[in-house]
Length: 281
Image 1: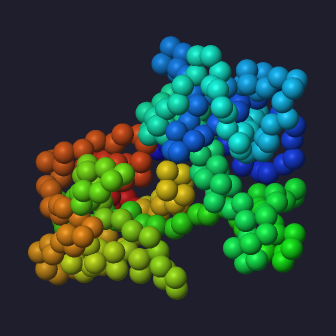
Image 2 (image 1 turned 60 degrees about the horizontal axis):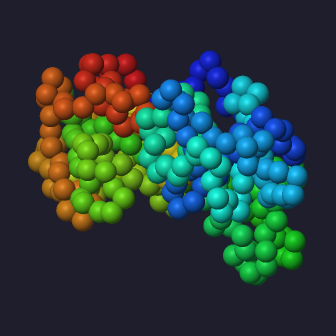
């Protein structure tokens, strides 16, 4: 999956740090990232490429990957350095090396959070970064805001040798590939309750034997995805929520039209079922 970057190691411990000339600088605008490609490898600007002695940039330390430091340039750039271009953040799904793709999308999640939390939601005063942890604080009323992480579930509903695949209803910004039932956890709900509710709401099925598989940070939507396998309980007739989905269909194991893309939890879980390994979890 996109976060699997071994032998590289992601370190999100927040520290106050001054950037060096060779540190990576992540710069975003409207779901785009400033980057270039060398021999098929994604590259971001280094500090030495974008900063001169007359500039005083607003740089924020983000994280490190095996000793390589990444900083966010909050105010962006008026003119891109020579050789760099703006690319859609969808590039992170396929870019190599994997650790730089993961750094890029994680940096965008933090950029979106900083942009959305410039002013206090309680009193309206400016928020300022804390120096001890990843958080912004209102000096006027003491309100504190941490990065947004939304818990959600990915659900592989099975019926013996069959797997339920769905497609979202057409909507701007949504993919229309086959996927699994998915949804966000509501207030006061356990993850297992989310599984049962989302399956019932989207395809009208009851489920049993709900089993946790694994989780994935999905920075494209500031989500922590939690994967579950479960079995249909009783009637297998699909009643589709057409506001959310355009397709809900049972597929025999050998007829599943998708392979693991090495990026998403959804595709990995489909691959696990296709290989007949879902009962190992």
